[in-house]
Image (spheres, rainbow, N blue to C red):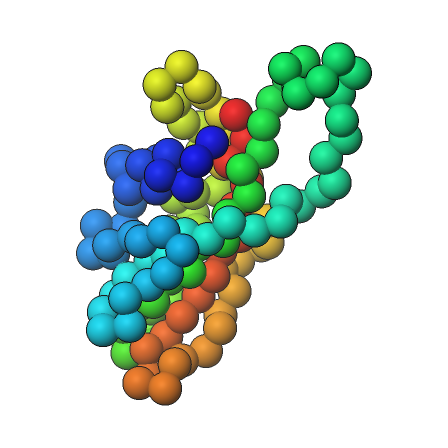
Length: 129
């Protein structure tokens, strides 16, 4: 699954934080409310299937979702938790693929505030299809 497909899943329906514009691989520094989708190492080592990749039963796309959620700490925390709850354990269908979302940690991870006072959180997610 590509990062564009991940972005499509994140930006639709109940998964979406409608106030957040998501980018791939980076976030524009001038936006106080924004999201970035980054590839990351998977949460487990992948075993090679007998007969090769075509015999694999499922695929895992591991991403980190960085959320920049403004200068109000309480609102930023609520938005990050809302996004986390919307993503955790959700099913999705994309073209001919169906799957589910697995969040890696129990809560969004607070990264602190940047030099301008914008609060940042990260959520590590596996898209399993």
